[in-house]
Length: 159
Length: 88
Image (tube, rainbow over all chains, first blue to last red; front, side):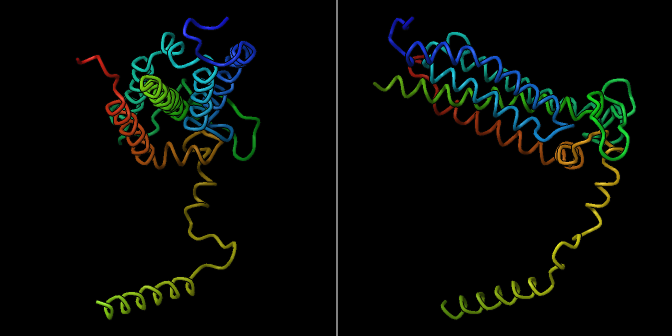
């Protein structure tokens, strides 16, 4: 069960963290995609997802995690999120009057308008807010985990 | 130099006391903006969560700046912690 270079923690920790990793990622996606309905949003959900990847780095070791998701891949993931954010903002310039205007309200995609006051929460609302939340979530997941992975790899190289 | 410091100190504290004297009553709304946001967020943005509506819609530029700060920090870390041996 141990790696070739004996990295990571004991097999118990590896198995348990591998089991709960998908659930943490699902919770992170839930917080991101319900950002316009419930407390939370892109930054918070992204921090949850990044902490899941950091848990993998701690449990399995930085080298093993790097083979599955290297920091170049994570950094690319982050850049895709940032580009999506800016593209949606510029699309507001084209489709409506101003930069980052909420042009999707009233359309078919995320365009429903909820009744005033408290309501059960309709997922298909919010205009561009869910898309921007998703972009920021991608940014935070990729960025934070890439930073932690890079730091872990550098500290491994020194010895 | 010391006199200048004393004068600046006195002016600063006079300003602070004036600001504290002129503050709103406890619990009173500081402006009409929060009422506007509470009344119109769901119609204008379609989002139930007013905080997300403010952060991503009314102040989208601010969030864009935050994302840029995050991007810059991560790019800096990646440049500093680049692996040795790749360029040698």
